[in-house]
Length: 496
Ligand SMILES: NC(=O)C1=CN([C@@H]2O[C@H](COP(=O)(O)OP(=O)(O)OC[C@H]3O[C@@H](n4cnc5c(N)ncnc54)[C@H](O)[C@@H]3O)[C@@H](O)[C@H]2O)[C@@H](O)CC1
Image (tube, rainbow, N blue to C red; front, side):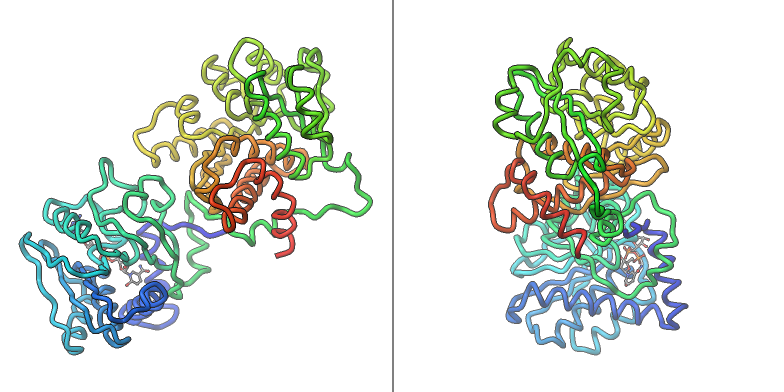
């Protein structure tokens, strides 16, 4: 797991590394700039490309000047450097790098009043502001950013796209530089995981600049990034002499006559993520489809969905995919709530909770898997994703539940004030049924005895990893294909 730091904590990590390694801040800036250049070389191998570096006067600008000098030494002759100096003072390391730039024979252009910027370069390196940005861009920087965006160049941002706050995006429409790619130092910034950052960058890549990892990991943060190694330590291999009873019995309450597919997809996810037994509670009209598509899955007679005591034999109770929100669906959710046992609720089960105001009846230890709209319906509207995430952190702790807030980077939010960010997934997975499969996977992991937070971390990770594996070969990835890929992904995660 990687701790995601605030800008202030990044500065502390910087200072700590400088004193611990007995190096100067200038050396660290040089190393960061070298790391940027190495990554840049891999993207822009043609040395004849025209490059325009836009630097501010802080340390991000200092990086920009060092990068320009290093690129010239690498043999990129077509370099221009502009320094935006509408306001502010030069940082010490900026000043040294300015002198070094001039010694290297590069004379920068100073932009002190808004004006037209030459717009013929194919590549822009954006080093106006980095993690030090602490207020929205003013009119002058805003205009400059707009001019850079208008150039149509391939924009590479240094550490953070200029205009994007590194912790939480500023309110309102993004008015900064729009980067093709950000090369960010040591850690992705917190705001990179919030959907608003899509306006500022298309992708980011993290560069190791040698900051002290032990110090970074000792910092308290409300955001932690999951990594492949976490799966290896969380996942448990199947045991010798084990049998189907060892791996739990999941009940999925799902499906309605028009949306039986959702129930089948959830069951398929559950089966493939290793539940010992999977039982589906669906309307009778779905039984033929179930027996044909998934012969390993059992069905619960509808009459048994009226008796809470009869549910005691299941190790996990899940509900939602394709369930509908009518009276009969609500009666099923009501029955599950009366058991007092932790529940796994998704989709229509969440809508039922919201519509009937049953949220306060939810037992501790439950898991909810809302997407944005379902979350807002349950917990109230939010003006932006940071507010939504903070609400999720508060709700999970107050209610002692785990919230899986689904998005490109899904946040697994257990009680305790930390969000675990899932890095896996691919736009090829943007199709109906994906959430149903995830519910089935989570049910299987809970049935196998994983704690709620671990089940959610593993489940989200392997769901996205399955999609990524398929997307490396396919344009689009269906939910059934993701479910079918899960056993291979689990094996891979365990062994690698
Ligand atoms: N912390 C680290 O680990 C390292 C940081 N480095 C670089 O240093 C950067 C941070 O540098 P700084 O802290 O000097 O900050 P920046 O260079 O991001 O910004 C400079 C200054 O601009 C001012 N400012 C903030 N918002 C503004 C606005 N809207 N309009 C006008 N002025 C504004 C602030 O006073 C800020 O200190 C990082 O992003 C990175 O590029 C690297 O050199 C190497 C290591």
